[in-house]
Length: 282
Image (tube, rainbow, N blue to C red):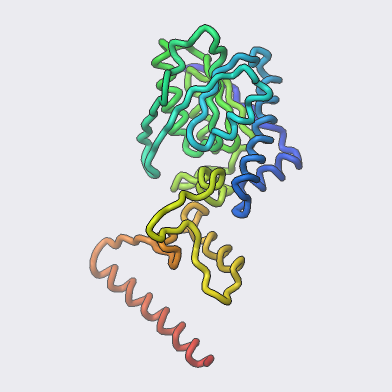
């Protein structure tokens, strides 16, 4: 069995801790997120260059869309002669089925001025996406061992190990290891939102759809938003925001009618008790 590629993690300094706190904060704006990723990418590339004296221009960057585009922007000054090949990877949460779309030419066979191939990904949670991409690179390269570098900001330990075992990977550099990846495929500590939406802003939707909770007039906006965010799936909770932003919802599947009946009866008792206390307080 081949020895896994080295995994290099940035030194855990107070500066890095502050950057990662900003990266995971629910209040970070898209501009702040992009600036934070730019700074982290500079540090990651610096660590990669210290480890690998051959990592010089030219290189061919493969940013995994859409989250890794700020990494590619930040990589231009330290690697000014880099070219770019776009790869869009899609996977349904809860599955390991990844589809890779090459939006243009592929890295193999390489052009004469391509240089080293560097994969960029902001977050590696389960590792399914990067592993699938590396498998395709392995096949299209004619099984060219240790020919690809992987750079990422935040990743689960198990995912990093999976990526390091890919024969095409020469080494991996990560800004910080997460504690783990939870059963829903989210990194812990949580990034508090979809990383793409945090970087670029929520998707604009027609027909009255919203990406933010609607807070009633007179309520403490910050308190309500904070409470709702803590309940949402992307932040480790069990609920999803409805399209109109007026409520949260959750799908529960029962094993049979009896279990469903008992559960709804208990819910009725809870609401009845709460209503009684509220009425008495009027």
